[in-house]
Image (tube, rainbow, N blue to C red; front, side, top):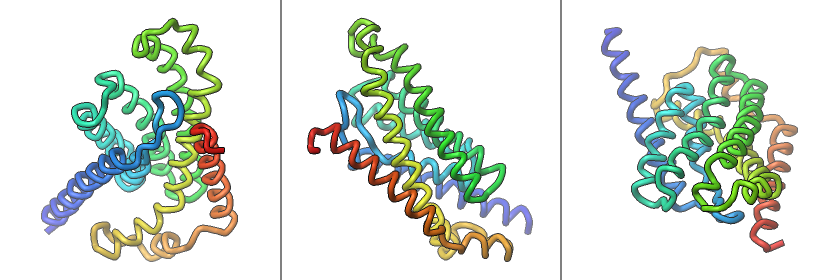
Length: 225
């Protein structure tokens, strides 16, 4: 009986990871927003972070590798460099957030993980753009250094801010829907009560302000404002 239950849970997990990989890829294809130079925002990291929160950082890393690999062979024009940069960016954000949340599944832990993920992703991408972008663009490294603060820094902060706020706002409704569909096991009584508790007004307002700020920055990048 125990073996059958474990097999069922493993099958459900693999099915959900496959579905989330597909959703992440579709969102990447249809949701890409050009921001500055060759940099584009897409919302796939939100789905990958969901996977990390539900199943742990290793699952987030696996989806990141799969989606980035498929992207490289289908819609990307940046080749292996784009693949490496996508994996580094997503793992720095999603896996970091998942590590925090795995240790303690509370709202403060989720917020701490998401904020840490934003900062780590930004630092990692500044470093790797400094190292790789000169070869990708065929320009002197000094030209890339001149773009780190005015272009790469705000892009990654905005990208991380959007992903973090949308993850924070959408995660609990997603979990409730998955449990209602019996795709996730029910939590114990205390945990279920905690999971059903809505986000506080302060958290929702803060997330809304961050989200609006990120959208305005994107509009500025695109010359609309």
